[in-house]
Image (cartoon, rainbow, N blue to C red; front, side, top):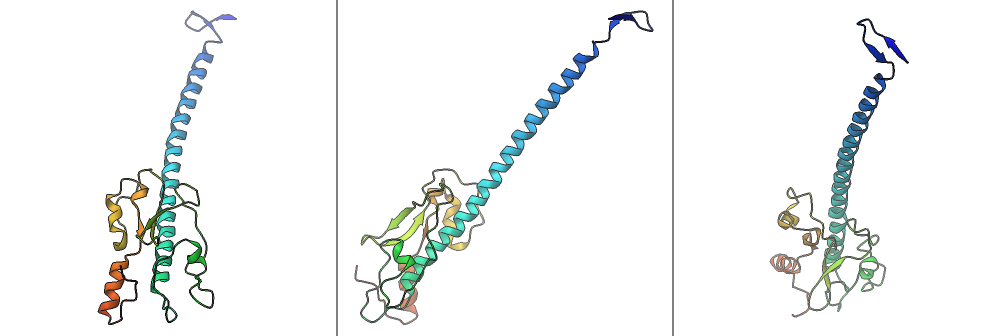
Length: 183
């Protein structure tokens, strides 16, 4: 319908609908940008939480390996590193069950139960690392034992390992005989 306006021009009452459609398109575009930003923030927060979990879990494995190594052994038992994770769950070197690790943990970065293993020449495990090749967000502020993580290019470089040589040196300085096998 066409009607006269106060100025005498002819105008359709449907002309105003184009403005509403344009406003609605801008609103949808703005919501899309906001959702993209929210998604990025959520992804970053989730990644940082996985990093915190990796630091906790990796440290649990390192401490379990250290406990396996340092625990006083029955007479005649040779000190060695664990050959697999099952030995950390139930140490068969003792008459009673000794647990160095409560349970096996999944790699938070990959979601898999498989870890990269750092082994000595005898096949003993002295460290673990994530199999994820993703680049870490965290670049500084690590505990002293993990200071080498500052230069990591991927999570694979975050190696949680027990330093056997340092433990032997500390034991010698404390006056205890080194009980590790001859190398």
